[in-house]
Length: 302
Ligand SMILES: Nc1ncnc2c1ncn2[C@@H]1O[C@H](COP(=O)(O)OP(=O)(O)O)[C@@H](O)[C@H]1O
Ligand SMILES: [Mg+2]
Image (cartoon, rainbow, N blue to C red; front, side, top):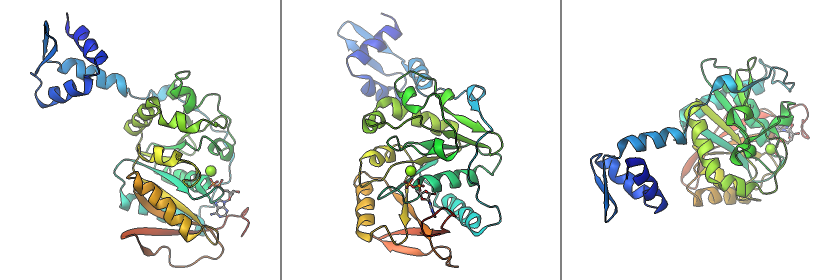
């Protein structure tokens, strides 16, 4: 029995993780496959497996599109300034992984708009590869915001019907990579929970400098708690004069129960600009930052 066959046999027996552990600690470990077979020095096989799991993204294969039409934030406006502050705060917070997700208590609080604009502002740094991923699979918005309809999306990759590269769209003009979703999916939870999704998110982490994820509200579905476990943390979008304090507490606790840190709060639909950009705010013994930004032109409050 050669090394590969022995390893396949181990995998079938469900012993892979145990054997991997031993190999990491001592690459000369002898692993007994059965009473007749013993295997030593498994390291080369482990290396191979690691590569197969998260292969690099072939950037020459991704879709390039410069016909996005969307509402730009005016460069010299106060709202642009607020996004620059949010960008800086994010660098200071320095999440444990190079990613954050935007969530909120309910729909219509500004998650997608904030995710989109922050991504655009992060992407202004030309040496950075910034990716915006739509994981609000129930009510996808990213494609609509950029006026772009993808042919394949991340769900097709999970189902092994598309290459990951073909679901990433790059705008040279904006220096931004986006992963829009082509339709709404009612079985979102099942898709997000899959092992393929975990691998995809890990692969994206390895290939991009920073990933912004647009998710759905955390009071109506479990989806953000599933996504949150795969990434660096959550930023909670709070709609001024609408989000209830109690709901906000529930939302943060729901994430915390799954060990997902809430890294900050973004206040949306601000009617008037308050010169103090953000306050430190004591909340369940943690410090969160409030970011304010103006209501956009099309807002109900604007
Ligand atoms: N900060 C804001 N000020 C004013 N209007 C906003 C703001 N953020 C979003 N909107 C508007 O609110 C609506 C819902 O925003 P969206 O980002 O899709 O919310 P969500 O993703 O939380 O459902 C959109 O019409 C959007 O233009
Ligand atoms: Mg949305």
